[in-house]
Length: 113
Length: 113
DNA sequence: AAATCATTTAACTAAATGGTTTAATATAAA
DNA sequence: TTTATATTAAACCATTTAGTTAAATGATTT
Figure 1: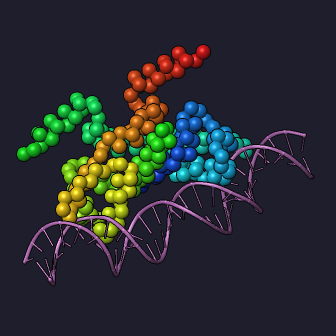
Figure 2: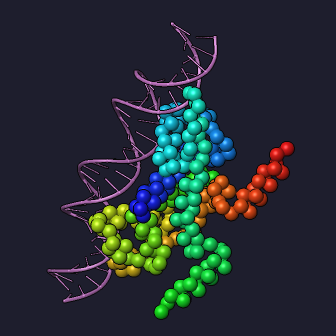
Figure 3: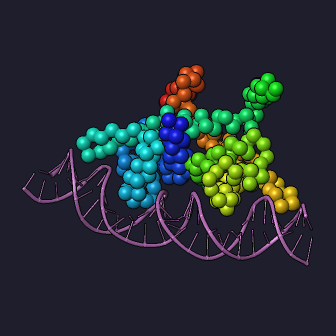
């Protein structure tokens, strides 16, 4: 159960580690896109893009709706939230939001003894 | 300049895509750690951990301080903020913080014509 | 000076990744 | 019913990744 989550995170971060895929995410966020639409800006074969989309799908970052011969892809943003959640813990270590930092320090002090 | 940033993001997300490395990040966040300390919880050679640390270093996620024969590693959390920044844009697509969503919708409406 | 300790480097391996091209599948249009 | 279109699948390739073991480097300790 914890492991499932771990795995999901692996795949999400892995998916986001490629600039082509980040661009695709960005395009899908605006609105539903067909595969060829997503491929258009890139100097790359359609098959390559198809694979990139599959990687995003494995990470549960895209919803796909097939209608006839075209596939419509859109962002499943809830999955992104998992990455954000993981990162949130570390915000206190860099954030300029000193209020957050302060409350964390207080918590730490309370648990000190 | 935009590209430098892109590259940085690639490396950060790549680094975070591995559960061993995420664990190492977590350990470093608590306090400075030696390489062997970081290796201890894992059923893996020291050399493997040394490599993992190097990946994190390439992503600029760790600061290393060499003192004698021991290396002290700590988290460079500012780098994590870059990932958070990238993700922040997409928060409006999933967040339950409806205020944020609302203000974004307003912005969109204003630019409509 | 010799032995030990902390760490990295090198050489190797298996598997994964990111791309290609060509073929296959399924739908739509002529 | 043939032809064109949208997409995936398969086979291939080069590179990267994540691990290994063994050797090298550089402090410390004895």
